[in-house]
View 1 (spheres, one colour):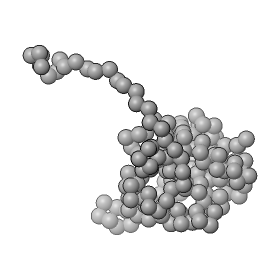
View 2: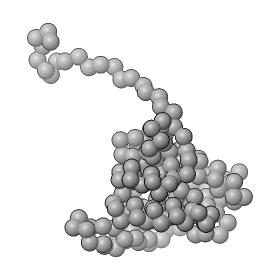
View 3: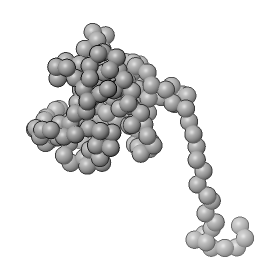
View 4: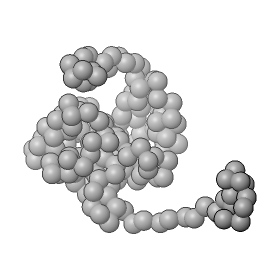
Length: 175
């Protein structure tokens, strides 16, 4: 130290760090590394959906850095809306949000949907989540309906409660 007070310390320039990532199917074994994506109750639901993927009713994708540990996940349901792949449960590790991982996941999901011969993607976004909606709109999704949705969540004391919200349903034609 040169004798400067701590509030006068030099600020170092920001460095850009580039990390290769891959997109692959999420496995049940991955879930132990996904506590950032939701509660234990939520991860049990994800585990059921990963098992359901064996029937080809859904796909569940993970974005992974070289460690091969998931840092982003998304489900695609092929039965929820006839003629469409429905994206749901999109989550990105909080420290990596706004780094392009959500965009990568959505593009990968759209490719899976196209690979099934479908030409439309759909999703629901909570109206209380304008940041997510802005991402979907930037990627070409357009809202066409508002609907109430609900699911179980674990309360602070571990009791299961019903969470109710209003969502905008969005769609995008795929080419």
